[in-house]
Image (cartoon, rainbow, N blue to C red; front, side, top):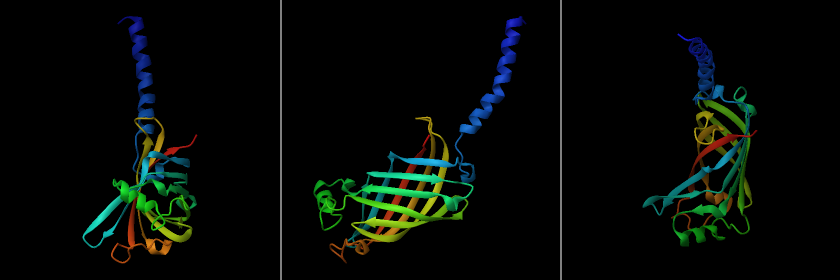
Length: 206
């Protein structure tokens, strides 16, 4: 074997372990204890709220709110120290029905012109299982602030294959009573209990 060929083989053999370690380090993990600590920002293209409520008892009606921004301070070694802040543009409520969207933005419901933003600020994070946690905080909607509990599930974390940014993904669920926030139109025939389903991909902040 020629000397140059031998040298190339040696260099390749030396590089393989390093490449294997790099691949392992960037591979997604479903173990929350292995997530990088630090600050994260919600990817607005992959963060939304899907809401549902009973429609006159005949069906469950679904819609979404897509203008959602959030900041997350994450400490997987001490989950109780993690914090979440969310800002929601209520005018982005979308039912795929233009007339209904306008009504939901009106004073009967969100009154988006007077109260354009809803917020959530966490106060406590309590692990409830290997990949789940209960996030307790305060939801402010239509000028009213009430306690809210999010049941959150960690999906995975790792270097995103598209944008190559370290990303952490979660799903969540919460239930509110809209009447408690001054949204009482068409009660009781239109459901008071609203289920919120949340999904979000958070990008590491350099």
